Image 1 (tube, helix red, strand yellow):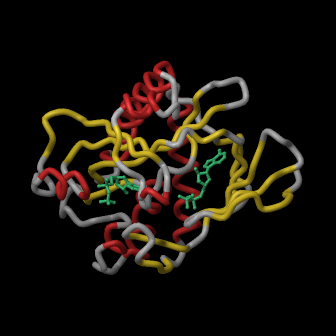
Image 2: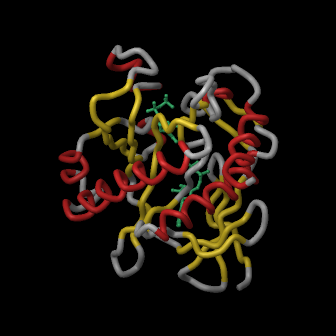
Length: 235
Ligand code: ADP
Ligand code: UDP
């Protein structure tokens, strides 16, 4: 397997072609952005942590019946994944009120929710990833009803499995964002990443943030927090 030209550079990762049209290499950077790109910075070592953590978590999910894009970790920052057509939805699952949910709905951050919620944002930077409902997704042709049903079922299953895995290492899973993609045969698989960039992790004992909110909110200590999550999960 040979690394070829760069296909895309995003805010946190680069994507490279390979000599296999069905596979791409994802390369994780230390770059961090927040506030819709208004804040830019670096979290030293983040790329390594997110690459290794996302791969470990995706392998666990795959073993429990959630299909993922993961193929093989190549090195500390790079992973071989199945190339997918990304479904342009940010799929957000919440167990506890935080972030935009708290702000928009006036529910104090940290309030446990009566049921787990699922929401979709339209993945479009120019429009600032607006919140939409599933009728909007259907109306715009972003996904079919069958795809949305599959995505919702996988998202809740990821929540159940991830919540358990994190609780075993003393971390509460508050909320997270997933992205899904289509393989050439139309099969829906979990893609992108699962990491402290895309999840809210709170220490179960102290309530301390162990995620990107430390950077987003200028709280500091983000480098140590990312290392701590990796240490707890991967030893
Ligand atoms: P952004 O595009 O939001 O800046 P990243 O910096 O994380 O995000 O860039 C990674 C890009 O790669 C994202 O647009 C993501 O949707 C896309 N991606 C993730 N997994 C795959 C995959 N398996 N195949 C193709 N594209 C993918
Ligand atoms: N999230 C993400 N990428 C985004 C927006 C949100 O990974 O572009 C994650 C975020 O880390 C959190 C969850 O999705 O775990 C819910 O985020 P929220 O809607 O509360 O947005 P925020 O407070 O980050 O604006």
